[in-house]
Amino acid sequence: MIFPDHCKDVAVRECDAETSPPTAGEHIYFSSRYVLLFWQGKVAVYELELEGNGLIRTISKAKRIAGFAETLVYRRKIDIFNRSRLIAVATRLCKPPVKAVVYQGFDLHWTFVYDPDLTSVTEIEVFDVSPPDPPYLISLIKKLDRAGIFGDLSVRFTPVIQDLRRSTATIYPCSASGIGPNCLNSRDIHVGEHAVLLGCDISKQVLEARVHGLEFKHVNICPTKTIRPSKPFIAKCCKSARVGPTELFGQRGYVVHWGANPYEVVSAIRDLANAIR
Image 1: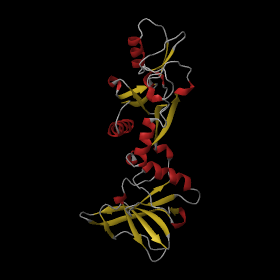
Image 2: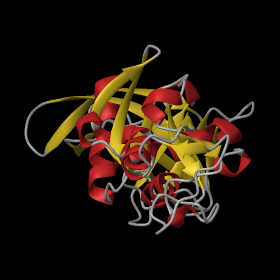
Image 3: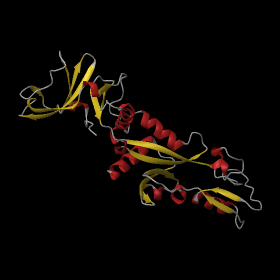
Image 4: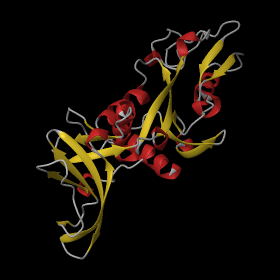
């Protein structure tokens, strides 16, 4: 796969004939590593080698990567800094004879993807519980991803949701879940025969502190105790001591606090992505 690191590496040129590619000896801006050659609505892609110093340098070699018949121009403007999306779109559109897809950004700059490879995009599993609906961590990451916050990381996210409503529990950790009335933050808690608490380690400690000596079954929903990631992952926990990079079943991950704000979630994902690299 060829995907320029930045749009500043991509020069654009209009040509009068299909047979007028960039050639050795021509002058070009110093940061140009590729040229998109436009001709009658079609595009060819060239890779350049430059020599010399200063802002304007000399082309020493020009190699055609994809010809006019092998290149498709994406017709809508797009966020050209969202690398994972551009790779995914190019993968869908690159069918013979097309080998490259050219994109124009909202700022009118250009880039391209040649021979797209989805394996270059890191999949991150996001573990969360429902309710609330939508799950907070998953919803937040979706919003941040749509805003382009992770565009340079070449990552995509797969939600993994544990539906708490499927449990046969009789006691729940918090009324905010909306699952049932018998919650730990209720004034009165009913702990009857065969009581089952659905909650994390902290939930268990809270119930034990409120109802001394009563027996109950504990179904632990703490992600650090229950999940089995198959890929790099993000999960949340209510214990601050567990926040930070971690590893489960051979997979690198990052635990954020259950009340993590957007900045903290962004930092966690960027730290994880950099560690994976």
